[in-house]
Amino acid sequence: MIQYLIATYSAFVMLLETDNDSMMEILTKTREDLISKKPGRGWRFYGTFACLALLNLVCAIDATILAVALPVRLVPLNPGSTTY
Image 1 (cartoon, rainbow, N blue to C red):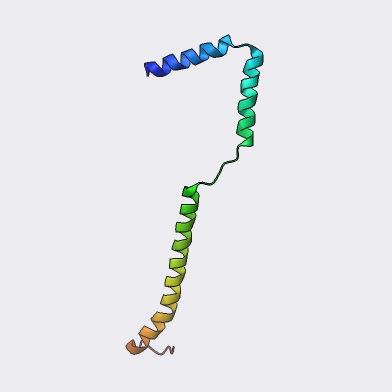
Image 2 (spheres, rainbow, N blue to C red):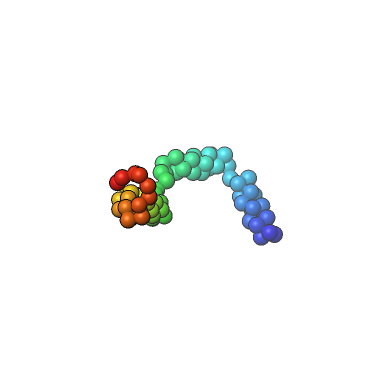
């Protein structure tokens, strides 16, 4: 904690010692850098997207299998008057 306070204090003193023109140049460069940088999509975004797509595919296949298999498996059980 003390080291953080000392580092912050020394940075503050350095800012006070610089003149206004160089301070404005530093702030302008930082602002322009922040505006020009676009957030990139890293491997975590694409990995998450692939996992969600795979999960969606598995759910769709599961629903298709159940829709086909349940009526076929119910016929031998003779569930009632409903015909399949």
